[in-house]
Image 1: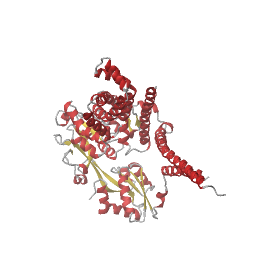
Image 2: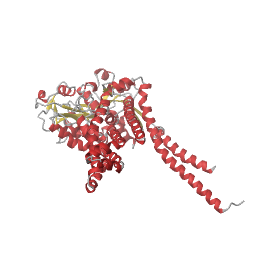
Image 3: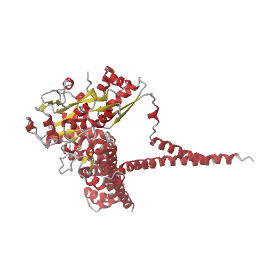
Image 4: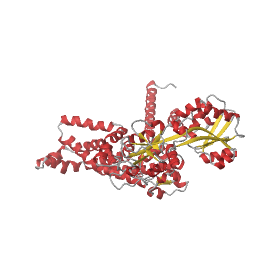
Length: 297
Length: 277
């Protein structure tokens, strides 16, 4: 019973259609699988000392002493360092980034914007270790000489490097948000006699609020996860910082610094440090999702 | 039917590959033949060097060398009891250990140099002073005959073999290290940090010495390989193979002979320790 040729061709077409759908699905699944593998691996390794070897998770989170060779694992100084460094970078980076975005979107003549915009985007493409080298060669000696410090490797050096590093994220995302504000808002405000700058701060920025908040959270993620640049300028001392000039060891650098030689429990504790870091990122993503949901309304 | 198989294959085969890549295979361990197994155990500092020497030696000899890094004292005990044919130690033997009938053979030396900024006038310290610096008992160069400025201590990261060796020789533990010390990974990083900070003091391996930093003498003795070999430079330690003469097989003796040959000592030099010749 021979089928008509058209039906046969159609059948082939549908099969191919379905097959390519599966190929795409698999590609999409790859990233999910990677995520699950990474989470699984980090948690499997990191939880082990607490469930199997009787270490206290509370002591791990709030302990002041990190001396792996003497079986002491406390990451409190690093948690504090990570939080301080991130907040500090936000305080410096967000206003600069936001003003840059406003300038590019609202004020700058097209010619000027054409120079600044690519420059900011290029900043995002610089490998992070180069930021570290720049920090070590320029920022660290500068702080050392001008503040009369014994060592320039410090919290403030970390903050400065991170502030520069988060600029591209903050600028690009908030610029997009500002540009998305309908022209009629500006026209209405200007027509009522409000000045240009007044319009920007009273009308445009509030209207772009959720986009700008997204920019801030993304910048925060960049700051808290950064490793290579920080390792070179932080000094990596194991103290709870009490001043901007103290050298610090954020969570990320602790992992990168010691993973090379770590074995056994020491290595598992570094994975556990990774879990804490991961939790910070998860919280940030959760906040981000909340903001976007709000922005949608 | 065919369709289903294709989908199945698309998802399952890569998954299987992924998963099998995650499970370590132990096949390679047992397959590298050799009719004689030479058991060596001991110091974790000597271990990496011994591994390199064994790898080089196994290229041309029909032997399987098993190295267990379990610490100097355990290695010495194993050699005494005959559990291992050869023990590795990164410290001199104690008298009672020699009394147990152990023979020691120095296979190389480990040397570490304390370095400061070239502008620093302090160029000679005692081991006790080095200890005081790294434990934070002395915090100003003035107390050591230098300028009136704060000392910035630079250390390697916890777990590093150089750091373990330095602490062991100088005589302080990781917990005693001054808390606000800068921690840098790698010899090169320590060197750069010290070279760019006139307050700084750190320690590096011999082969990293150059003009960018100023090497500090220990008890008036310069950090040089010949001073390590003649025993005057104290920031060093011997790497030993220890064994009982009656337990040492011909194969074991041949391995030791290889280590002491110029070829073996070249491997030692390449792995960053001081050869005995």
